[in-house]
Length: 282
Image 1 (cartoon, rainbow, N blue to C red):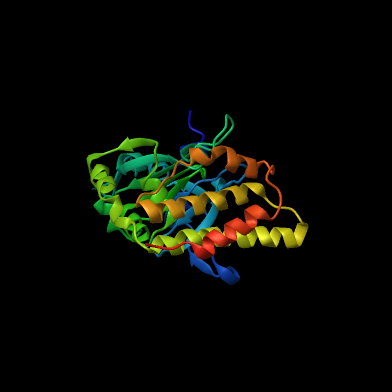
Image 2: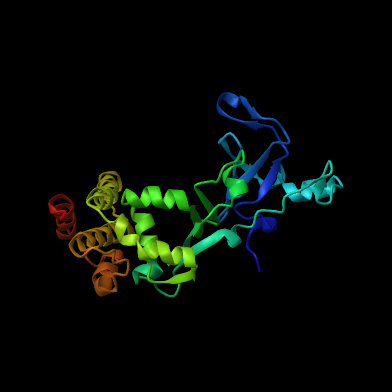
């Protein structure tokens, strides 16, 4: 059974039933403007993120939008508009060329109640790529499932972006096509000294958040500390061995000890800072 509100998925074209306004309440798009859903609600949220042809994005609740196909059907067009055949609804799944599990289950740090996070790569069809909408960089469904465009995978992967590399090196692959097999076969081409900057940049940002937490409340969010250390382990191994070790099961007990706050004290923090500042790129 679908958990999407009214079966509206990322990639669905919609019609705005209200005026779309920007900063200072200025009118950006009139009522009836067509957009594409790029993110669906999650948890208790009730807003869809909608991207319009000019690139402007707005958050709309369900009562402020209608699925374009339903809108046309309600007007009695039944698949045709002024004698021109209406394009069929965009179904993201048919354009997914690769999908994998990421997050705690891919890291080997999961437990029975862990969420399952999925990330994929989609190849936009020509009519979407060349349309007024363009192909969105990423579609997200309920925050636990995302699909990134091939162009963004190439660009961000070449920059050593951790999320993209972890996706390409995930040990749990759910969907693999001939095209994505070719991509995985050349994934080592994305590995460079840029990884030293990107992984350490992610780690240091987490470290600063933890320091801020200590200053503000005297408490640490230990899950963040665990993932900071995981990033450092991944970074160092990648630089030494030339592959991204997404699964860190060998360090599971120690990392989970940090997560459960059984590793209190400044030693882990000092070690983390030393790792980020002294790791040597090849």
